Amino acid sequence: MFSAMDIPAAIALNKTVLARIVAGLFGLLGLAGNGAPATIPSRLHRSIARALLSAESAARRLIVVLARITKMKVPPPRPAPTGLMRSAEGQQRRTFRLFDPRQRFLRQQPPATKGPRPQPRISFFTDGEVRTIAWGQHASDVSPQEKETNPAQLLRRLEALKAALDDLPRQARRLVRALERRQKSPRLKFAMPLRPGHAPGFRRRPQLEIDHVLQQCDWLARETLAPDTS
Image 1: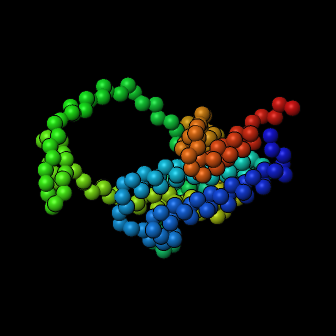
Image 2 (image 1 turned 120 degrees about the horizontal axis):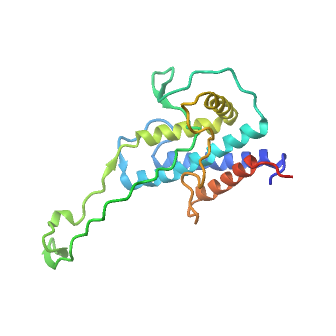
C-alpha cells in the first residue's frame, strides 16, 4: 500500500509518462495537435487505437486516485454532458470519458467458415521478373494497396485525453460530481468508474511502454480504493 506521501509522486510520474506517450501518438498522426490527415493506413489506425485505449484507462485511474486522496467535496450539480460539445470557436470536441466501457459478453459465435482450399500455383514472366500466384487468383490482386481509414475519431479522443492530463484536478471534480449524480439516479446502473476485472487495454504480457504504465496505474487505483483492514 502506498503511503499518503508516495501517491502524489506516483500520480505525477505516471502523468508525465502518459503525456509523453500522447505526444507520440499525435506524432504518429503526423501532427503536433492541430489538424489531421484525411486518411491514414488501417494498420497505423489500429496501432494508435490500441495504445490510446490503454492510455485512456491509465489516465482514468489517475483521476480516480486523485479524487479519492484529495477527498474533494461535491461541487454544485450541473446537467450531465452528452455526446459532442461545441467550443467557442465552433469546433466540436469530446469530453474525456470518466467511466470504463463495460465488458461485452458475446453470445455463441457462428461456426467459422472454412477457408479456401489450397490451389495449384503458376509462375509467369512479367517485366523481366518471375511472379507466382495461386491458380484462379488475378495478377492485380497479388499486392493490393493497404486500406485507408479516417482518423477523425482518434484525433478527438486524443485531444480529450490530452486536455484531461493537462488538468487532472478538474477531471477529479467532474468524477466526484458524476458519482454523486449516479448515486441519486436509479436509471444510471454503474456507480463505480472502474469496471471489475482487467482494465480496458490491459495486457498480461506487456509489449509497449503504455502496457507497463497501465499496469502501474491500475494497481495504484485498486490499492487506493481497497478498504483499510488494519
